[in-house]
Amino acid sequence: MVAMRWNWVLAALGLAALPVYAAPGYDVVEKSLSDLNRDLTAGKVTSEQLVQAYQARIASLNPSLHAVIALNPKAIDEARAADALRKSGAKLGPLAGIPILLKDNIESSDGTATTAGSLALKSNTTLRDSPVSANLKAAGAIILGKTNLSEWANIRSEHSISGWSAVGGQTRNPYVLDRSPCGSSSGSGAAAAASLAAAAIGTETDGSITCPASVNGLVGLKPTVGLVSRTRIVPISHSQDTAGPMARSVTDAAVILSALAGSDPKDAATVLADAHRADYTRFLKTTALAGVRVGVMRFSAGFHPETEIVFNKAIETLKALGAVPVEITEFPNKVDVGPAELFELITELKVDLNAYLATTDPRKVPARTLADVIAFDKSHRNEEMSYFQQELFDKSQDTGGLGDEKYQKAISDIRPASGPSGIDAMLKTNDVAVLIAPTLGPAWLIDSVLKDNFVGGSAGSVAAIAGYPHLSVPMGQVAGLPVGLSFIGPAWSEGALLGYGYSFEQAAHARLPPQYLPTIEQPR
Image 1: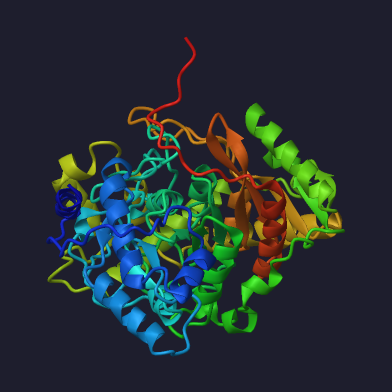
Image 2: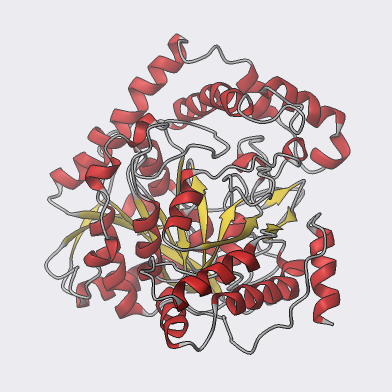
């Protein structure tokens, strides 16, 4: 039965059948990186058995979750190599032999396509590693495969459905299956929550790591833009794009970020990364919040009564840890950066995507420009545009490039308003070290008619526009649906944020495993 399910899943993913392995007795569910490392070191499990166990779990759950798009056909061989290295007594990296999933806009050299969820890129097998993939491998990780995402990282339409892509279908929230996993790193969120791998990597332009982390009961960290390379990642915006970890604990997120961070000569934004990178696990102390003044962004709360109850309980936990909450009732300036941000994103999308497509193989990717992708979608309307259109693509195509005066004004307006005159000003004026808010409300129903219908999230947008780090940590549940607590700080403050998040996590114990419920009973 396992073999039949496994081959069926492979077929659904468009992969040839791999050799079938019986699922080993080792239980990977909810295992942390330290659990896996300990058991690998003790000989209780091998890396090969870990890969087999996660593959079997994907075979069992992915038909319901649609979280995984593709599997690395070399994963077993790579696991065997990791086992041989361990047996030889060689010095091992912190992720040695541990399976990690990549969002399917991040290139890896294993022969899987990097599709961004679009049929236009379904054959985009570049056979090259992104620095994200290479850095994980250098730390010893096994790239298990690719996760589903909101197609084109949710930049195609203003009326999209989070978690849907033409390649991967509709990702579902593992807590309640008719609820949204949020986007665009929806598959990474659902997969990590469901223990389909030890952890996953997402990408964010505005909310795409922290939103799925929040609603899938995960720790998600959007780093400072420039800490992690974006090279060979299908882009939206060079001003705001970044990759980051999505894991079931703060410790795991810190370990993975330590592997991801670093300068890349091909990505100019990362010039300062080596000067700021660290072993982020050294910041993880249960006393990290003692005496720390914490700015409570009330203007980013109050959007949902039940979430507000959980948020206020979280503040009480922070106080018990010695933190000093400071109420902040309004944002320090009244500039509405939303329209300017959107114009920035769609302007950079056309430039950055065209540059990325130029690096792909034209025999595999006939669409060489955004205009070609737009035409492709129109010619494949039934597969690509059954649920929503591509009006943002159309608007992007009409933009005038990076020299356009409107774009230049948007850049000059929104970055200072969100960073120096926004987050930095709040920190300084209120004499606080960190800002907190609810990340988002609970997951909403997947709805092909009304599309996404979420509440909250304004705090994360400010951090995304500023390019500053944003950590979301589970803070509790509403009707069985997870909600997250956001920690936001100045540029390059990842270590401090992880320390604060760890202290809260260890005291609150707020994360509960997913239950895979079909729905939440509605009142009669």
